[in-house]
Image 1 (spheres, rainbow, N blue to C red):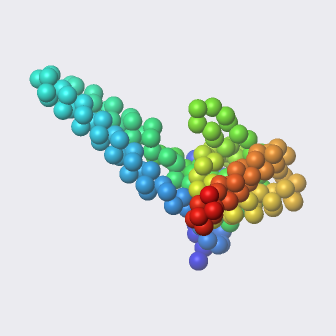
Image 2: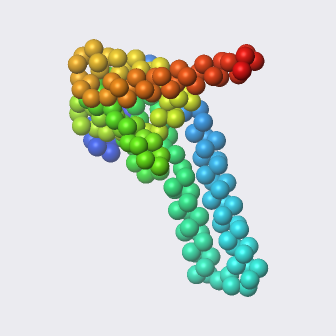
Amino acid sequence: MGRRFTQSATGAHAGAEHRGPIARDIHWAGEMRSAIGVASLLYSALLAMDAGFGKLDATRGALWTGLAALLFVVLLPSRVSVGPGLLSARGLLVAHTVRTDSLVSVRWSDGVAQRMILRDTEGSQVEIDPTVLARNPAMWRRLDTDTRTSIRRGTLLCGETALRRLAERIDRETALTVFKVSGLQ
């Protein structure tokens, strides 16, 4: 069965139908629950503190509600999925999609949180956490296959080194996992 991808925020891929399995981040639900838990814990602690000091009123309650909601928005990760030829990252309000079989560049954004930025020939761009790919082998295999297609077609002008570095990282983590499971470490 085919999947129909909706129009992305950049306007690309409207009505494009691609066939094949869709690989999703298997850890996303747990991370969402963690974001809800942390925001709820902060909200409860702030309300309890204010109630304990006798300073809780409607204004402070609204302030703490807004602060907890902001923390949830900051902690909620994008929901990443990879299908044949497409990578999609859905945030709270916006979804971005990029064609992985016609990538132009793959760059790293080093900083507090490491990000991988993928851009395709249509000008669409997606920014994801490379850890998502490292933790989800099915997603990585699909993306790796499609990026090899981009390299073969000659569209990938910048980023082979970034992809090689990510592949080495994933291979290293996979080997460590195999060693741990087999009791060799």
